[in-house]
Length: 90
Image 1 (tube, helix red, strand yellow):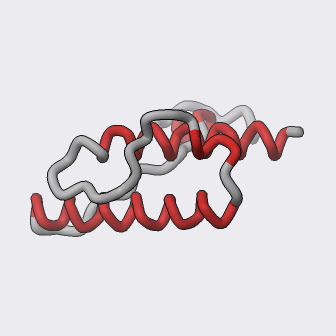
Image 2 (cartoon, helix red, strand yellow):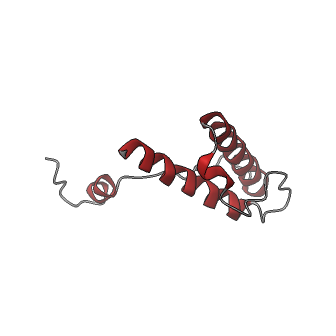
Image 3 (cartoon, rainbow, N blue to C red):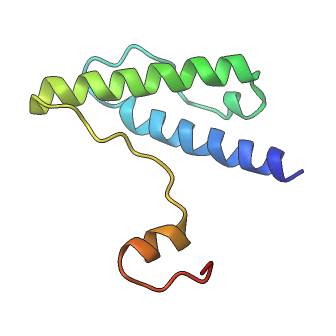
């Protein structure tokens, strides 16, 4: 059950990322008009992820002339620890 919830959160984040980029110049990917990816096969999600990050990386490079920092999920506790807060895990 927890794995399914985590997958749904990942797919939701991925589709939101795609919706933002679908407005960018040069976009040739899916439309993201509905929640079609919520029940997609793992292979389709993997393919979408590769497409989105490739498009993001290339567009960023074309715009700024350097490699991008790819957005990723950061655990809140770990990010607070990096900022100098004491981690409850220690």
